[in-house]
Image 1 (cartoon, one colour):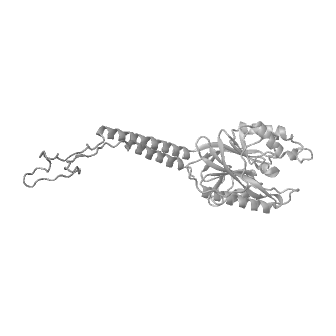
Image 2 (cartoon, helix red, strand yellow):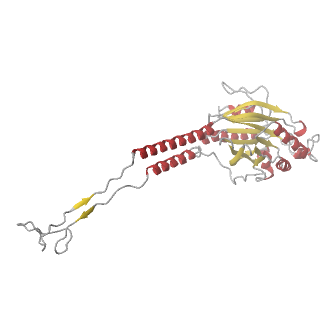
Image 3 (cartoon, helix red, strand yellow):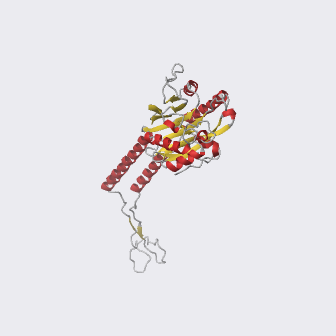
Length: 374
């Protein structure tokens, strides 16, 4: 089971990615090297040789002529050697060699263009996967002294939860009430999934783990948001960046649990509103500044209120349906568990699956498509 260590401090939005263009730049550099290699080669050339006459005193390159006889001062009266230059033949590239170099360069250009186009097609191609939000009912609720005595304990219920994930081909899931014992059961029995933050942030934050199939996604980055829970106490909740193994497409996933109103916890409407404000503001900024699509899962303990809050800005839509055009129009049937997606995410096949005695919540899930509209 793989596990990613979380950052030690929360992190804000990252600027739009440069890594999409890094392969393009590298390939252009390769093309330049290929071009240079085609035109580099030995230069054909020669040196100039000169034969210079010598005077009687042996001084090279000079002689004295008799103005009357035209002879030299030499005793034998011989004419000095004539001076001559032998020029080298200037080298050149044969036409057939030039044609071959051009042909090879153009072939390399076409290959480079094909590779760049293939990279861009993969990076912008639609990518389809399955996403879920699942409150698995904390083990403490069904153990000794818990308030849900009619349910089995955490171990058999986790087997049921894992079966629900597998039966519905879930690739990414946001858990709530995922306590340490349930985390241990899950990681021991569902080795196809990795998690964040795992146990790295302690017994409180473990309850909000995000899990993904490692055959489909690879961890890239993560940070947390400090969210007010019951009574205003703060808990770090996860935001993780994953990359598709198939296409290289990336998306942010966030998972939250906002406090309910209960006799033991009291009225937490104020803290739900504050939590929703933090969540929506951060995820909207993340989607708009970073450039990657954002998907939020969670038990928000609200129906119409959280739908209207999330969709009001025109950035997010709900997998359950509904509309914000011309005012808030929630879907006809709503749970307190939601999946929201930013621009660049399209939902289909939304379903609410009863998981029996695995939990007192249904699992909500949907097909999500990362479109080309990032």
